Length: 72
Image (tube, rainbow, N blue to C red; front, side):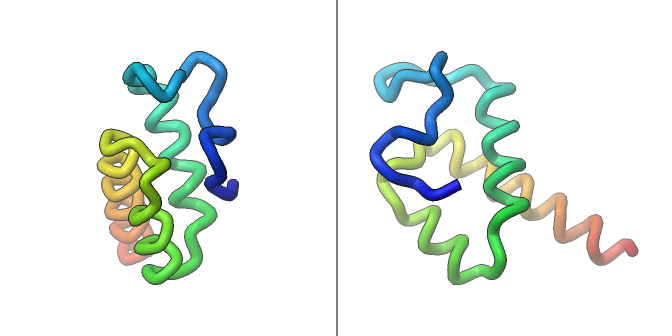
C-alpha cells in the first residue's frame, strides 16, 4: 500500500470526515504489516495524507507487533 493522494482511503471515508474506527484499525494493521523498518515508518508517518487518528493506530499496532515478536 503506497500513499498517494487519498486513493488509499476506503470508499466510506472521505477526507473531510473521520472514518469509522474499524476501518482505521484495519488500515493500521495493513500498514504495520508492510513496514520493513523504522525509517520507512518515519517516512510514512511524516506524510500529510495520513489522518492523525490513523497515525495513532499504526503506532499502537506496531507496538503490539513488537511485543508479539519479543514473546516468541
